[in-house]
Length: 215
Image (cartoon, rainbow, N blue to C red; front, side):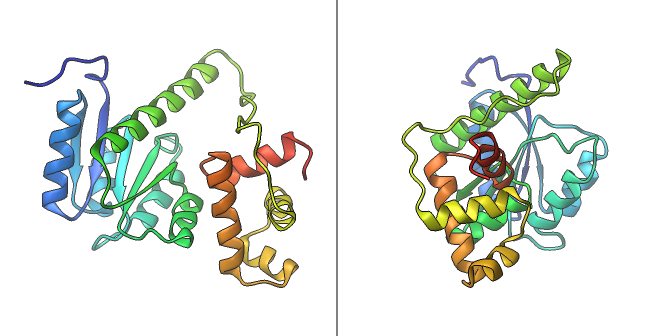
């Protein structure tokens, strides 16, 4: 029997080229009270988005015809749907893969295989965050809330230098040149800081650095 919850009106777009994963995840999310639309790749998903505006997108990274990176770039460039939170599902779990996914525009990056309960928790957290942003806009306030991180976050000297460059808008490649290290090293530092702070992407890292006068 399907659970009856307050999430019944939340519609999710699930994109993956693996029909077995689509079936399993769709069934689990529907059991938890969500409505789920599916697509087999990014191109098919963009066609759906011409007619439907879901509350959240769950997307595989490596897919035929159009991969997740290209798909999310398209979403973020369309003002009509650019606000939709995106969760990446990927079999690639290296730090540079996670950083690339977040830098592309995903809000959350999860590695396969994953626990269904963790997926649901990430979906719920992302939907709540999107709702808070919507309420803030509706109330006429364009000022984003101050970035919140654990009070005991400690950055190494190198991480502090990296986040200062991030706050200045430099790309990882440019930061690597400034510090005379490899781009992969910079990506690793960014990934470590995202893990320490619980932030989702470089944009939030930059805001945190500026708000705390690190930049």
